[in-house]
Image (cartoon, rainbow, N blue to C red; front, side):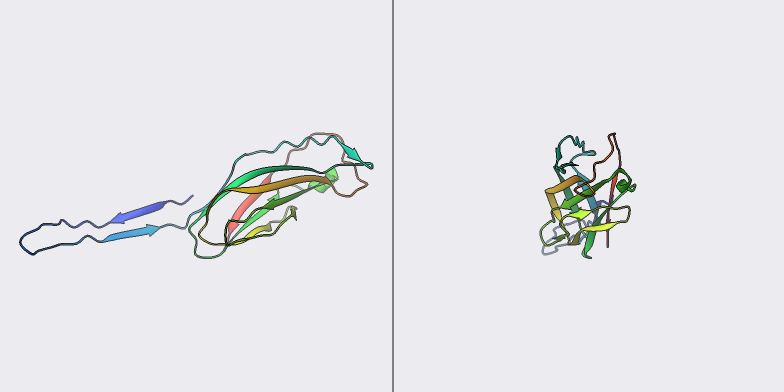
Length: 157
C-alpha cells in the first residue's frame, strides 16, 4: 500500500517595513492502488435442482477502489485452483468506477482475466460485485461436498 506524503519547505516570514517572504509547498503524491472488498469470504449453499441440474446461486457484495494513477489500470481476477473438476464454474462481475469499463460477467479460471479496465484516478466506494456459482452445463450435477477456493485480485497497468 502506498501513502500520500507531503513535503513542506517553510520560510520564516518577517515583516520589516515592505519586506515580505514566501513559503513554497511541495506535494508528492505516491502511486496509490488500493482494492478493498467488504467481505473476505462468500458462503454459497447450493440446494435446489431444476430439470436435473443445480440452480445457479448468485451473491452480491461491494468493493472500494482508490487509485492516484494517471496511467490506465486494470483489475484482474483468477481462481487459485481449477474448480471445473467439481463440475462447477464461478462467474464474477465487478461494477466499474466512473470513467472505467467493466468486462461484465467473466467465468474465472486459474489464469488472470480482465474484470475492469481503463481505471484512472479513482476513489469509489460500494461498487457492486456479483459472484455466481453454477454447474458447468445444464445436465451436470456437482458431487456432494464442501469446497473452498480463493479468488485472487490484482491491479495492473
